[in-house]
Length: 179
Image 1 (cartoon, rainbow, N blue to C red):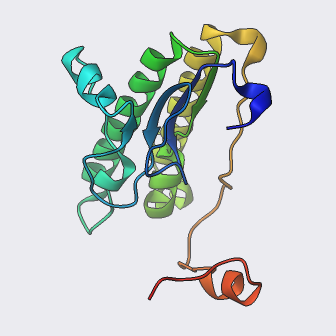
Image 2: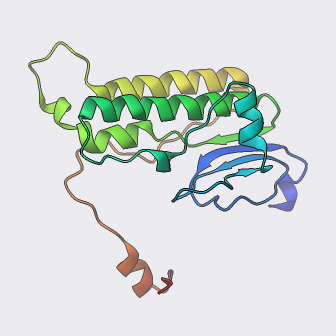
């Protein structure tokens, strides 16, 4: 949206606060917070990718609901793989690629107990998720190694509670909730 970037073609995949999709110079796959049919720009983007054999999966399609942890992890990998494959395909026609891969966040909250188990020969799923992200970053960086920036907003530690910051944002005058 900034004038100084108007000549650049963007591809944005799975970035929070991008839903609903808005037109941009390039492609966008939004991060919806609920099920919807309108999650991309251009609107036909995901259908076109699907016809090419690339199936996208939104984060909203996977929540931990008490299923076995191994099942949850398998599904988290499916979602992450679909998001990476989409990003790699869209990166071919872009100047700037922005992609949010959420696998580590997804599995860390619910599979942290594995990090405490020292009596196993199996690599913990959380560390396998970091391996996945490392490989994803290598693949993305290989597309344009001179201009790749990778960052993470995820810490490394056990989730012991859920907390919403809505009250603090409202008190600071930074948020208004619809009633």
